[in-house]
Length: 167
View (spheres, rainbow, N blue to C red):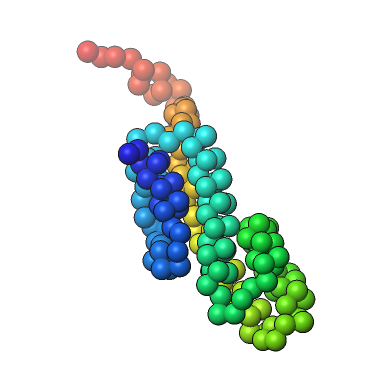
């Protein structure tokens, strides 16, 4: 199995909360770095970002399925589908969840729980995306043409003699 497939498999194999709780982004990073050492194509990096987005949705779904209280189906579906959009809008997510749950008993506790779990999911997403960013930067450095050495300033006579081969 290629290391690229191994990185994708790490995300795909998680199906239950205990697996999600035990997930270590460092394993994903190792698989990506190993593939980068061999040669990682830019389209593979794009595929990794897409896989991370799918994983983020799946992780949120797993967490909501294991909520201490039932999360309404419509809210669950909405959160799973839109969780990544709230990465920079955590307070907006909290307000929207709170508004949707306001008519239920225990709404505040469930809102707090959903916000905490969303933070966990989004933190994992951020860590995985950072790994891909680092791989993209490393790949760009590997593919960049070598830098030309600038001509050394100095005495024109000395520079002229340094070009002569005395052998």
